[in-house]
Length: 496
Image (tube, rainbow, N blue to C red; front, side, top):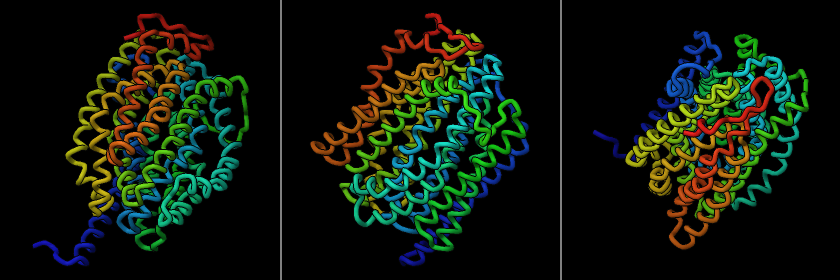
C-alpha cells in the first residue's frame, strides 16, 4: 500500500535519496581502497593488439570519468532534492563559467600530455622531466591571478547570462566559492593528463574515487545536515578536488619516480613551453570558445525561465554520462597515437584509428537507450513535470546524433595525438560555436524552444564536412612532435 499524503511521500523520497548518496559514498571508498592495493605502472602501448590496448586503457578512464560525473551529478541531485529547482538551475549555469576560466590551463595540460606520451614512447627521460617541471611551474604561477580574475567577473557574467532574478544570489555564491578553489580542478586534470601520457589510466581513477567519496560525504553533511544550500555544495566540491590533487602529487611521486612532480621547483624550459603552447593553446582556445558558446546558449535557455533551465541543465548531466565511453576511448586513442609515433611504429596508428572508430560507433548506438530511460533518470533531479519535460526535449533531439559525434571525436583525437592541433581546434570551434549558437537561436525563434536542441547535431554534421576531407588528405601526418627529439613524417599508409 503506497503513501497517499504529501509529507510521508516526501519523507520516503528524502530517505531514498540519502540512501543513494550513501551508496555512492561507500562505492567511492571501495574503489579507492581497491586501487590503493594495486601496483600500478605505466603502460607501453607500442606492442600488442591495438584494439585491446586502447580498450584496456580506456576502461579505467571510463570508470574515472563516471566517478567525476557522479560527484558532479550529486551536486545537482542534492540541490534539486534538498534546496530547490532554482538552486538546481544555478549549478547548471555555473559550469560553463568555470570551464571557460580553466580552459587555457586545461589546454596546456593536453599539450603536455601529447609531449609526455611521445617522449615516453621515445624513452627520452630528460625531456620528459623538463616537460613536467615546465607545465607545473606555469600552473603554480598562473592559478592565483586566474582565480582573482574569475572572482572579479562573476557579477558581470551573471548579468550577461540574463540569469533570472530568483537564481542570481545562489549562482553568485556557488561561482565565488568555486573560483577560490580552482587550483584543485586544474591540478587534478594536470596529474591525470601526465599519467595518461605515460600510459597509466588506473591511478587517476583512484584520485577520482577519493574525490567522489569526500564530495558525497561533505554534501550530505553540509547540505542535508547543516542546511548550507549551494554554498555547502560548492565547498564540498572544492575540498574534494584539492584533496584529490594533493594526494595525486604524493602518490605519483612515490609510485612513479620517472615522472616525479615538483610543483615548487620553478624550473622552466622556454623551448618546451613553446612546444606545449603550440600543441595545447589551440585546444585551450577551443575549450574557451566552447564555454563562451555555452554561456551564450545558456542566456537563450535562461530566457525561458528557471524551470526550463533546470531541466536543460539536468539533461546535460545525463548527456555527459552517455558521452563518457566515446570520450574515454578517444582519449586513449590520443595516448596510443602519441606513443606509437614516438616509437616510430606508424602502422599501429592505422590499426588504432580503425579500432577506435568501431568502438565509438558501437557506443553511440548503445547511447540510444538513454531515450526510453530518460523520464526515470530525470526524476533523480526533480519530480517537477515541467523540469522533466524540458530535459526530455533535450534528450530526444541529441541522442540520435551521437554517431556523428563518435566519428568527429575519433578523427580529431588521432590527429591530436599525432601532433596536429590546428584542425581539431577549427573543427571543434565550428561545431560548438560558429554553427551551434546561431542554429539554436534560429531554431528557437522559428520552431519553438524545444527544437533549439537540434543545434548540437547540426554543428557536428557541419564540422564533419571539414574534418573528414582533411583527415583523408593526410596533411596531419607531418605534425608529430618528436621521436627522440626529431620531427617525424608519417607515410601515406598510416591512413585507414
